[in-house]
Length: 139
Image (tube, rainbow, N blue to C red; front, side, top):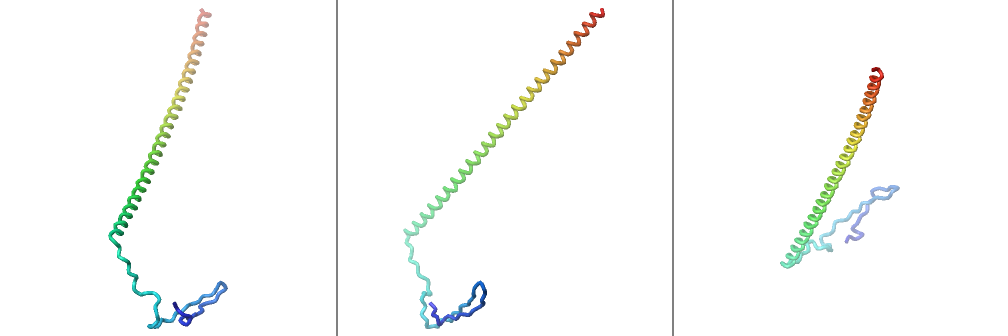
């Protein structure tokens, strides 16, 4: 840890929002005691059992991840099937309703046509009657 004598403070600027300083540390002397060791801490050697345990744990994590991905894919496929089935059902229902509407229109057209033909037939029969009456009265 640096002592107060080793630190020099230099004011950089003073503003309404605050002040800025620069801290200058003096170089340590070669005979100064360093608190942190310079060499890295040696790791203890891992045993074969620990390595096997770590590999097994990694394999288990991989299998769990793989199972989760497969589960998500299966759910996605099921959702796609449901959407497709719903679309097919909607299409089928639309086709049925369209066919029913066409049949109703055709039936109405047929009824109207028959009514017009019946009216024309009656009209012509009435004319034929009048013509026959006129022939009888002239003869």
